[in-house]
Image: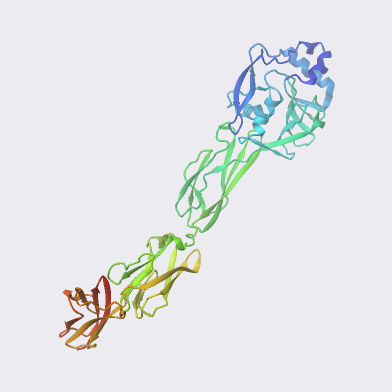
Length: 471
């Protein structure tokens, strides 16, 4: 880069011997990378034999001092090895840590590789100390901000590196300045939640290839509900959750060798309650008490019989734990008695026809509290059939008679049917099959007093009844 200062200084005989950098002859093109790992074109390193002599370097410094006087401080000698862009965007970081393959480069092109594109490393900010500065338009120049807004540090082409007032240099500051700061790091893959004793490895993704030993990484837990686990690398941090219910904050702070800092912060949810149950995630399951699921189960409509006993619960069962369900309540529009109930089930005896009746399920969960959760529909599963027993109560025997409430479907006495009798403790007491006709006698002599369940199976329908036995 040949800046206007070369032409201003050409009146000095000594400076006439300073060869302006010829990038086609004195430099070799090399590949460098921005902090966000974007390949930057137009970087050159000086070939052997093309560096300024000590006499030329001293002459350049003396003339600059004579031109600007005490208003400038030299921080580095004149050299063809790097220019203003190479210093501000590359060398100021790498010179300190000496980790880059090419510490000093002459950047031929503008600095958009650092400030534009999805992989940009720096973003535009207002003035601040240590910010990188870009002179606009015709003034193709870069610099570093100091603690004084009017004072900057910049390399003047192949002349020395100076600390100087913005206007005390060969570039036109009145064309506008832009300031740039390192973008914040990015903490990758935060979990949706962490539970007690869960561990998770967090990592930084934006600058993991940036001057490996030059950038400083500092991970910080802002609360007492996450703990660091084991040794962690600069780019990685492993944390473990405690039993606390709530949130904790994890921060990653970075500091570049030139003193620019930024940070990323994420909030971690710890031991959250299970999500509120969704009605679409569940069905209702109904089964005969001590038997199989009824027709329509799970989901419904359920076919039930008057006089029969049933077990009702939500389905599938494992979702109770997944959703933190603490209590389930059932209600039905038909007449029923509650035989037993728990947090997630109810046992009932149906006392009236369930035809075209409904039911509701009320669910209490850790997340959603008390809500109406599910609706049920019921049908008569006995097809209008019922049984009569006489005498009832009985002492020595009773006669069971099958009847139909539907005059269009009377009992067919030529169809075989079955009957079972269960004791008050739900033990099978008697069973008969291949019965014909409408009636069957049950001998009860010697039976213990109590309520016995009688179940007839006719045309794939279960017809229930109760028999009371007396001493």
